[in-house]
Length: 257
Length: 253
Image (cartoon, rainbow over all chains, first blue to last red; front, side):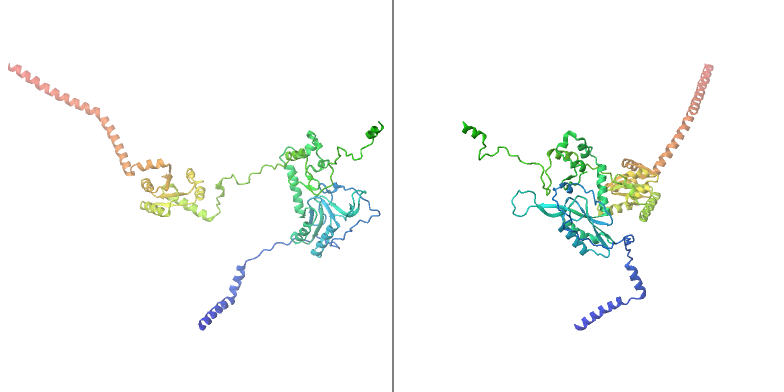
């Protein structure tokens, strides 16, 4: 029994030895058999200039005003498409608002802390595309009876419209590196938001423009509302004149032109 | 009176207005979508986006023969083989193979081989690409579906037909015999023809008969004339003999 096992083990080691010490020719052959790998050319970051302070700045919770004044609700500043900060400046990737809403100081702190903590400040920089909270929101105190005029200013907020960039990220990074950080942040915002690169945002805008151009429907919202056909303006809002029925309030109606 | 006036002029203590003013319209709620006016709903339905008709993707309606790749060396080799077959063989029959079992196929091949006929199989792609440039281009419509070639160096239509009659899975579509494209009916009528030597003999006999007939026709009149003259001479001779006999009888009387 034992000699049999011994012979088996000896045979196995013999085989191993035969494989472990091949001739010089076999060595070369093995190298050739492995094949060559072609690596992708790494992206060129020679034109990227990192700013001195790459991190997001702290934002004031309350604007520095001499006299705080109560304002009306001004709901139109979250309605319709954004007219400012809807294109990229220095960065490459951004969180883009896909609907209107208000950002509080807490949201801004959350964005700032998460992005600053998780991004690599040696290669990446981040920039705010929203101002610090400036719109006063009034509330009546808890347990207070109704009446007695407008309540006191409770907090300040930043109104954001559809298509506005919130935070811009750039530097020597690819999208795959910063996307998890930005998506984590974008999920927590009080409006639908998406992470977009320069290319994807341009593609979105181009697709919309193409849809408007190639629409086969002879009846367009714009012509009908401008011509006030059948007195339809009676039931439409003046905002519809500018948005052409693409928005209802802060919401965008998808797949419309 | 005074009391009644007072009652009319003074408002009642527990009076409630019959119509209350309810505010509609401007609501500061932005959490949900505002319900749309019915007319606006109609307008939105009318002015919906209609996409343009989808363009036909390229290559959908292009003919299938374009897929044949000439660069493939195996196809080129097969094409040469086909060319060889067409050069060597006098009879090339195209048959359709309707799920013939391999056993039956072996039997058929064996039976055909007895008469020196072989069965060949080429892809239709190769056949069509070969036929396109040659004088056999009219055979191209035969090559659709599972096809076989039955070829022989001599035109043996009769043997072919008798062998194919035993296997109903194999259908004859057409044949090219001695450089002539024949349909199934054509092949059958070709098979009924007698053999080459017999036809040649018939032809030769027919030709000789014609010449002999003309010769006989030409010789008919002189022959007849000579016969008549001979008869006339004979008659003359006999009448002279009678006359002489009569004269001698008269002289005797």
